Image (cartoon, rainbow, N blue to C red; front, side, top):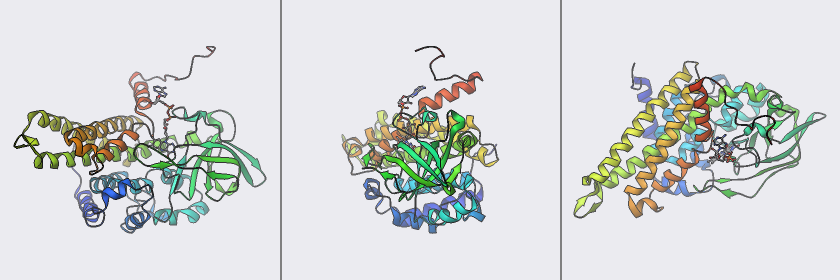
Length: 386
Ligand SMILES: Cc1cc2nc3c(=O)[nH]c(=O)nc-3n(C[C@H](O)[C@H](O)[C@H](O)COP(=O)(O)OP(=O)(O)OC[C@H]3O[C@@H](n4cnc5c(N)ncnc54)[C@H](O)[C@@H]3O)c2cc1C
């Protein structure tokens, strides 16, 4: 068993860290608090070859591994947390599902702009009445000649404000087998991107309204039953959320550590108070433990085993470690940590979001319980109960 990065991975990590330090360190605080997508940074990151790391080279990607993408996220987040979102959008989210299932024509039409940082894709899954119970989604797609007519609403989509295309989950018919997905272009007749709302991190999302939105059949990604087929892809996708949680927790930890070495109270640096030393010991332990689980899941996925169990455990551990460590960092940095003068509060607010997004920690624990007991526990009321 080897717990270290290979020589090639270490060299890659060094090169991403150098790029991030040279090009992204300045402006990291301002970028985190900006509401708009950092298109300038997206193009820089694309030129660096950090978009489409795991996408096949024949599709314009880098043909790398999931572990490479995790390393890229970690190194960028340690310098500029907001820039790690771009690596996420270009490697893990809707783009990965798209690259996996799109037709050659669809890839030709959209992948070049997505992989060069000129365009971003947003995932439209959640609805006002279908959150954790995602398969309760109601947005319908009815055939109309060579188009589908979409009716419904989506909420909370990351990058929904800035996206040019949307990967939208729709219902072609009843039940789980009735769910599939289509690509909706922003200028589709009958489709409206609503007014932005803000998450507590400042990140904005827009409701998406479909009022008989006319989507060409050529934009079908996965037909009825498609939802089931791509469930395995979700495990790999979750690794991006998991990696950012942990890396941003580590970012906050580094801020607090530097602060505790410099800041003096009672004539001594904060790091000399045992009450704070023990916080750091706990924080380091949580980060190290979660890191091993993340790497185990990512390396396992690269060996063709995207284990739902490993991904679930890693997401839980990294979501919790990232948030708990960021909260402690804010506490250690006192009024400065709680203010927008540093990134500690931003790290805390962002890591909270990933405990809800991509499968909330409660839903992940439900899933884990199913592995533990080797049986399914339906969350639905028993049949016949009102
Ligand atoms: C930062 C962020 C980014 C997001 N990005 C996207 C995106 O890009 N695209 C998209 O479609 N959606 C996105 N979402 C939405 C996200 O997927 C949902 O918020 C999530 O699925 C939870 O749904 P909900 O908010 O409706 O909460 P609900 O499902 O109403 O749940 C409320 C609470 O109850 C708990 N709960 C629900 N059911 C159970 C159960 N059976 N057992 C135990 N606890 C339960 C939940 O864990 C949660 O704590 C994002 C959300 C956030 C916060």
